[in-house]
Length: 252
Image (cartoon, rainbow, N blue to C red):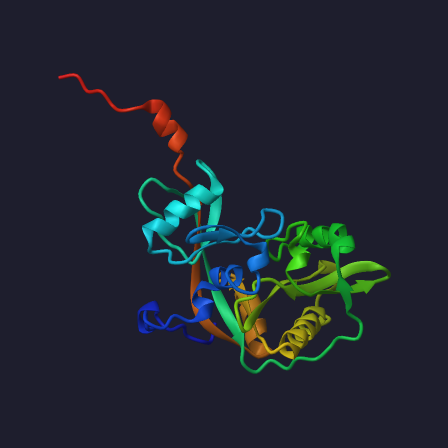
């Protein structure tokens, strides 16, 4: 990876960037129509996206709101958080990177077709084959998804996911293994970016920190590494068990 990431401490806490908490910014902004929200916590419907976000991951009240939103003893991912409060179980943690389009050449792809709800079964098959990240039955509703077909079969796709104000995330970039090496993913990324820029937004994307091949590709076509990202999958406290157990009695 050729570009360094600014330490978190170097960013001013008084002026956080909208992409520092992109899921929250999307759910309280352009994607508010999807938001299921309790106070300082919000999430997408479970058949749309797994993203769950907090207004401030350092605020214990936001975690209390999240527990109320998703319910006791529930496993949920939390974007932008690293350590949950006491009583929460960390099931898994992940490291990624966030890249922004600084020199990306965007242009339509004449061979690309718009994908919609009727294409979801094919999309899910391609996602299962290529594993670009989570894609659910209604994810296609989040924005424009474009695909390329070969002899009627969907072989490559890319689309839009998070939409913080002024920005749109490119996601679900994938190509069937039998058709890789032809630049299909790059053409689709450029085409999706063209649509994003037409409405005045700037493209960005996320990748797993371990996926150095994809990161190098994105950098080579005009994305710049902005920062490292972290996320956790947590289990909410099971208040029902606490209530069942009742107070502890210790006899002297």
